[in-house]
Image (cartoon, rainbow, N blue to C red):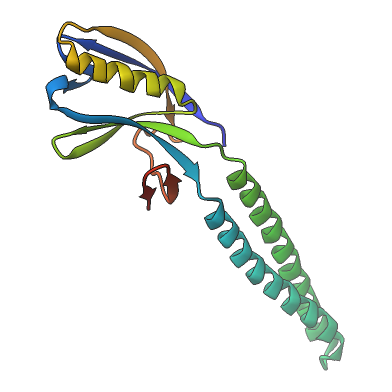
Length: 182
C-alpha cells in the first residue's frame, strides 16, 4: 500500500500555533514531541504462522480426501468427493499465497513519525510523516516560540494520510520509542 500525503500549512502567529485550520494557543501547550511508530513485525509473523497452520490443515485434509476418493462405493460419489477435495486444495494454496503476500507487505512497511502536542492533559496527534527531521525541527521551533512571544514562522509539511484519506487513522499495535500503542 502506497502512502498518500497532503500539504499542511503550519505557522505561529501572535502566540497561536496553526496547523491547517486548527489553532492551539502556545500558552496551553505543555509538551511537544516526535514519536517514532514502528510496525509490529512479531504480530505479522504470528498472524502468518496462524494462517499457515490452518491452510496446511485444509491442504492435508483435501489430500487425504483425494487419496480416499477411489474407495468410495459409487463412481459418482467418488468423482464428487475428488472434485470437492481438489477445490479445497486449490483454495488452501490460494489462501497460503495471499497470506504470504500480506506478510511481505507488513514486513516491508517503513516506520513513520508523529508530531504530538499535549495541552492541559490532552494529547493530539497533529502530523504524521515518513521523515523525522521536519517534525523534530518543528518541535524545536514550537518550544522556542513558547519562550519568545514575538516569534513567528511558517512551514508547509507533507502530512501522511492513510489510503482512505482519513487524517486520524488507526495506529494499531505499534511500538514506539517511549510507548506501546495498542
